[in-house]
Image (tube, rainbow, N blue to C red; front, side, top):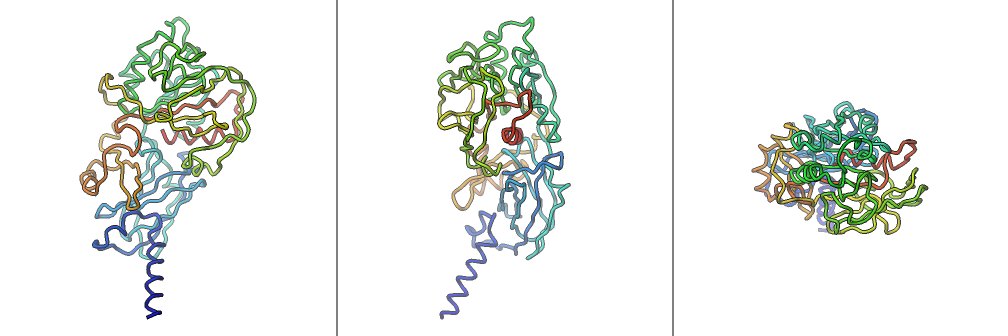
Length: 394
């Protein structure tokens, strides 16, 4: 009897080990679960040298069960998944903008290694940036091996133009850089209305430092709370350009997923010029704080913006037309945002999954804002790794 009991315990332990990274098998004991094998590899950006941490790696079996894991801060992963022919999905963010799909054959009780040449994250999104005076996010994007198109401030006044893109990068100083001979930005309602419609319809925005004026108003920058202009309500975010040049030491990466993907949870951030935008107050139900110094937010994110009065327009690349972003419900009560083929949606819906991301508004894009940026001297240290994460997770 004692031997039988030990056998049962050992069998249970083996099941738990085999299901590491899986999340729905043990909830469906009536299913005929095939034997498992493993897939391992390392996720890279398109340049083939930058490891990508925090990427979601998953497979889906014939019964639409999902087996998943995440890459560590070195981009490495090991996924336990049923034997047979399947597709290995690699995604960052919600999978709309960067994703790769690899056919693999999993063998029982064996581990196969996917070649690094196959695990590079492909760019699905179309990305654009507005040139700035103190910031060059485009250099980080191209350094990762991706393509981004320069547009002008005047292009922001054309909704049809910006709706061609999935992501807009608004560099610090881009308003003062492009404003010669144009109306005062604080009164430029076309830009604000278009950015509002862009995000409402699924486009994502990254802005840094003085580019807060696109969000909450101001001219070349935001000098005070309740500045005229912007498309985000003043009660949601207040900034003032009162920061001093110098280094913030021991800043905290307060978001667990971000810290895990980066492999560190503290860093020093150098502000090479003064009058940078300090966040005075913010609505914590609207913004997530990702990086902070004590109680001062330095990097925030929101997926909650929507304007019910904005025009409904298609935004982004046609490559997403046959894909849908869903919230997959796991057996342990957690949820995962992933992008899958539209053809597979009905089966996932039958499993209890829902349309749209697991957090934020289902149709809206993300807004990332950092008080720091890729400043002219280029000596940004670990902040550069954070900006790489932002690019891949918009």
